[in-house]
Length: 411
Image (cartoon, rainbow, N blue to C red; front, side):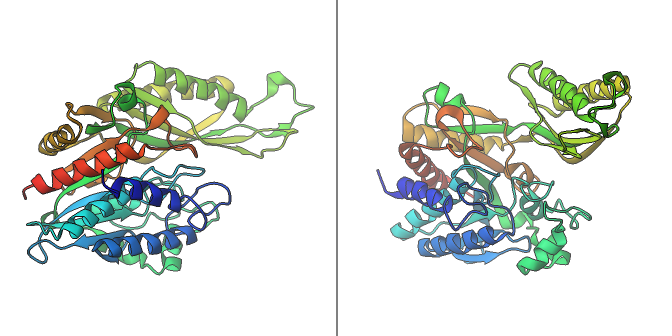
């Protein structure tokens, strides 16, 4: 066993501590914030120690490059994201970047140069923790964003354009983050599974076959604010009571498709949010995911029909906004097979193949180049939580599998 897996884990834990978080006592790092800037400085230092040259792209993502035998050759890109959810865990996204660095460190220690370059990618925004449009950086790289979304602000009222300017970036040059297809051979994203499938099969690592389709919506329910003590129950237009009924309907629809679909309300804002006033407006998030685009769309339409019916029966208004609608993304079959061979080589067992219910930057990158994903066991299936963890031995196996994959990879 080498020290690469252990060092990747240790560095993830370092990045989960002060000063790499915006909040004290928990991990929260968002795109273009002060903690994000400190994180990029540290990660760039680790990249350079491993033998990579570093740069920021026009979206504020960190890219490290390890040249091949021929300077300027197309690159195999390996990485993930460096932002986190609020009160998140140390390994979501970050571990994929650290594994990319350790891969290059191993090659550099051997003095090995390949017929292609290796680029290690640290995307700035995957989670959408600051703005309601996740995967900004990978979508920009894939050429899927033509301009900064207008009138989109963070919790402090800062627009995306202003956030970029404050960071030293030019919003008008965002499209310069786009890469040409002939620059990249493939994108490989190592990531914790964020679910229980690998552990349930008593495995350590697995290979992703596809990423589920997902839609994120914002639902606004409009009623009438009124006095909580003097308004009869029969005369109320309570937006929060209606939303509670709607959220239960969302749960029923999500559960109706077995294990191939899910639906979640994870965020709710109440106005005026006062104990003695009937809520007049509620806004809540709606996250819907399914194995196929068709199944997701059918579930989303059924949910909209039910929610409109609830609003109509209660005499309330309802509006839907869709900031994100991502199709299912299939991993390139050839990459799946090559990753599976590498996993079998290091574990001695047939590689477990999985569908990813979580979204990843790989969903955007599939529009630019072939993509594949390697999953690492999540003990307890826990993620997006401070107790999210990994086993060092699993991470070491992932490192060895990536090294075997890269050495066998032919452009």
